Image (cartoon, rainbow, N blue to C red; front, side):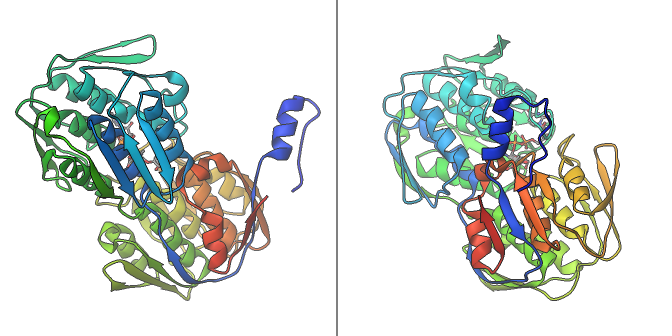
Length: 438
Ligand code: EPU
C-alpha cells in the first residue's frame, strides 16, 4: 500500500492511516463456485429490539456475525437485557429491564438502534432515545416515527438531542405513513403490539425484513397481519400474553444481490444457496435484461451465469418491491463497465452517490445531475486504484469494481463494510477471487 501523507497531517492521523486495514484485490478473475448467504442484518437488528417487549427468553437463529449486531447487543445490554451471541444465534433475556434511556454514545454510532423506541415505550410506558444525528447518505428524518407513536397516544418531545416518549397506555389507531418508511413501520409495529385495540398502518413498508419482524411479533404472542402489503393490521395484546420464542432470520437479499452483481461484473458462474429468489425479483429481472442468465434451481438456490459484458440499462431506486437503494452502488459498479450509457436515478436518499468519485479513480465515466441522477458511460476497462468507502453499500460497490478491474485495488474504510457483510472477502476468495485483507 502506498501512502500519500502530507507533512501537515497530525501524527495520530498518520498512524491511523498506516494501521487501518484495507481489502486488496487483484482483479480480472471470473467468479466460479457456490456461496451460502448469511442472515439479514436489517431483519435481525429489529427483532433484537423487539425482544425488549418480552418478559421471557428469545432466541434468534441464522444471525450474521456483524459489528451492527454486536452494537445492538450493546444497546439492549445497556437497557438491562442479558444477551449472548454464539454460533450465529443470539439469546436475549429481557426479563429485567433497568433503563429506559438509550444514550447518544451508542445510538449515534448506529442508527438502527433508534428502533428500541417503540418497544421501550410499549413495555415501560416511557423511553428516552437519542436522536441518531447526521448520516453520510442522507438526512434520514424520524418525523413519521414520531407522528405514528403520537397517534397511538404517546406524548413526545425532543429536548437536548433526545426523543422523550411517555404513555400511560397506548391506544390503537389508523396511521397513514406519507412514505413507506421501514424504520417508522417497525417502531409503530413494535409499540402497537401492546396497544389497546387495533392499529392499522397504511402505506407501510413492504420489505421482507418487515415480514420477518411480523413473524417475530406473532411468534412471541402478538397479533400482526398483512405484513408484506401496504396495510398492516395489529391487534393489541396484553403484556402477559407475550412469551419467549425461537425465530429464524431471513437470508440477506442485499448480500445475495451483491454476489449476483459481482458475477455480472467479472463474468463466471456461481450458485447462491440459502437465498429467497422471491425477495430479489427486481434485481433478477434487471440482470436478465442486461445479459445475465439466472436460474432458480430450488426454492432457496439461484444460479447466475454471466459470459458476456453487461449491456447498459436504466435503474430507478424505489421502495420494495422495486429496485432497492441498497443495491444502487453495487449495480453502478457493473454499469461502469457495461456496453453503452446507463442512467441511475436515486429517489430514497439525498446523498447516495458517494461511490462515484472513487469509481472515477478507477477510470469510470460518470456524470452526476445533482444528487439524484448519474449518467454512466460504460468504459472498456476499469483500472485498479486506492479507494475509500464512505458507507456500507459504497464499500460493496468498490469491491465489485475491484474484482472486475485490471490490476490492484485497495479498498479502505472497512468499518463500513464490517457493519453489514459477514466474511465478504473470504466468501469471494472461495469463489476464486484474489482478495485479502491486511
Ligand atoms: N424518512 C422520512 N421520515 C421518517 C423516516 C424516513 O422522511 O420518519 C425518509 C428517510 O430520510 C429516507 C427514506 O425515508 O430518505 C427511507 O427511510 P426508511 O425509514 O425506509 O429507512 P431506514 O429504516 O432508516 C432501512 C435500512 C437501510 C435502507 C432503508 C431503505 C436498516 C437498519 N436500515 O433504513 O439500510 O437503505 O431502510 O430501504 O434497516 C443499509 O443496510 O446499508 C441501509 C442503509
